Length: 333
Image 1: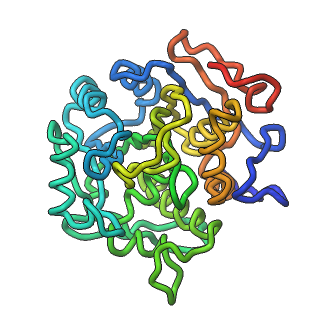
Image 2: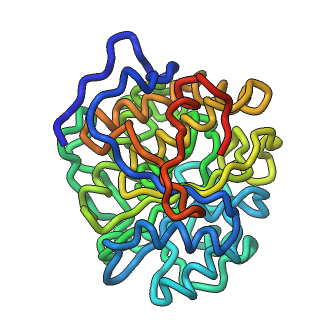
């Protein structure tokens, strides 16, 4: 895909209206069923390119985090569709329950991720992946074990994020595959300052997105994206039990082979909800300029911000979400 130019005047604090988006449409699949069966159904819609040794990148959470993806859903997916796969994670840049590999393994046990192998990708070192067309990086430092995998599934709990505004597939891969000491530091800090929070909002979104691009370019056609819109706190799962209460209604599970189309569709759905349902999450996205993730993905040629949603519960019929996204009718799926 060719690089796209961001619409003048539209920054990370404003959503690009659907009618101002250009280019092709990608397919996004949707199921209302928030369950193991729903996850398997939606995975089957996008799984054609998943071959060989498979890694499942998900956020396993801080200790006792209340909103992480249910373990029994992941267990069922792995048992029924991906028996030889592994969950993959990296250590954190901040000091917490997953800062070191030893702490991370203890947290995995507390949170119940004991039914399958969990590969901490940076446990034994790092690898450099090229960033094609980026303005901040030429390479990104990722967990060294990532290159042991032939295919990758980004299984993401869609929610807010204290710095990124929202955490979709882009954040799951961009932060979640970068190793805990080098890659995450490159993303969070600018040269000459050590404070991981002291970085311009747009710059942080762009650095994170370039990290994601290194990963999706590496896997090519052998990567898919699944976003679970459930328990959508404004807080990331990295905040554990300190996460803000959930006030946004559950939606369902969406999946695509296009990372931008998927994250964009999830953001559009949140924006199309009623004010009292989405106020907190929209404020989190816009105040952090998190929507820059979407426009920068488009500029880097990572996908399409226009899409068709197909209803996996009803024989893949198209869902008329376009009017909802344009604000002509209330959110309803």
